[in-house]
Image 1 (cartoon, rainbow, N blue to C red):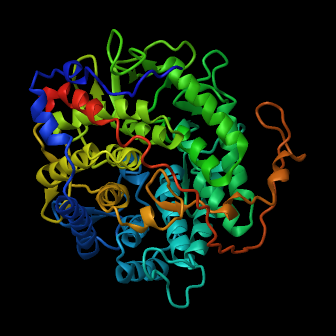
Image 2 (image 1 turned 180 degrees about the vertical axis):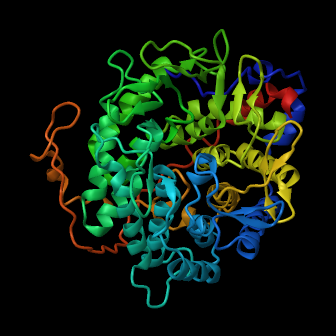
Image 3 (image 1 turned 60 degrees about the vertical axis):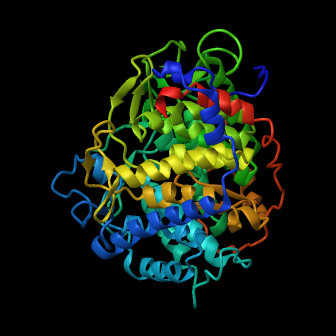
Length: 569
């Protein structure tokens, strides 16, 4: 697809019901340099936001999973109502918020609290629990954090300060292994190789388990499982995760190349035929690319490129360029996976991750355009509603649970462009969170983005992602940006160094040996589990990105962009 000119959303203000405002005002507000003093102030505000939430969790909620910030109490699984999946899918009675926040402590340079938190996790957290959790949530929030913290501890360079633990004996890696073994039953007794959505950490797959799962939940396990396999020298975990990805991929439409959002794991039948970039599919695309970045397996990149082309062909609507041509600026919509026909007129807040993914593949122009759409919605409400109807220009689902996706894309776009516009965006987000979500003991979910009523819940991703990305946006001197090490973030925001040793797969040939067949009839060998073998490596790839590529020509682009979001600011 040709991309003439730099992308910038020329009409989003009008699409979202904006009104005209003078160009000079936006020139003054957004195009100037972001003063160093203001940047330091915003960095400290982001750090203070994390500390306020973390300290209150430790004081009022630990060892429970989450903090209820309004009533200053802890929250664990809903034992009285097993059907309450909104809670029970996530909370496993394993001090979730503490575990999820480990690498944020390190990135902020708080070595004493990081070391204290790691010791608490080692000494108090157990996965031998009668908890039925979602495999996806346990993987990205807990398994991913344990692996990230383990890598930080064992990194010989120690870029974040002294994060070593005295007498550390790979306990976090052993805990990650223990959790992953408890998740493995989800991959058994499934005819397609696509895992069950939930497991009981003590007993395995529940007898009444649902045979339906979402594409993202089943197909976004490869980064964490792959890292674990390569650190242990045990191919089992990567094998089952990769088999699930291939099984889903082989069920895509022959006509459009698109996948649906809900599938039956026994029959391979698509129960949900909606194809989009939000809930149910988002991280599936993300992990195709990130698996390639980490592991260097060519097939992962090939799948991602094919998926991205199908997204451009069938989900992207509107004119070719953001600033040129007739019609509305581009938007990615929800369509039928088989026909490509529009299924509804809403987008969800999870889609705001996609500009960040586009940055990783170098499609910065399109990322700029799409990011501005979500920022325009944020400016109207001071938050992102869970669903927004772009045709009615109003929210469909009104809550905002402190999600990080817009912040993540803002951070990555700033790293790609170095344009101070994104620092202003980050400041707006920070100030909105402080104004509308801060309560007595933390930060609370917005129940209603219009009247700003709240729910008594602070999800763990607020500390592991939202605060982390805001802090990194304003901390130019952070080791993440200065160490020379190439870092990548998981879908839960956990930091992983792009290490050449993660690209070494001694069992690669096993994946094609005799031992079964995949969905296309190709042989697939299931390897046996090996003994625990720890690989601690600190040798990293050191390619330096060209961060200045987009830094200069964007000033006028942003002035047009902001001038069209006039009624929302």
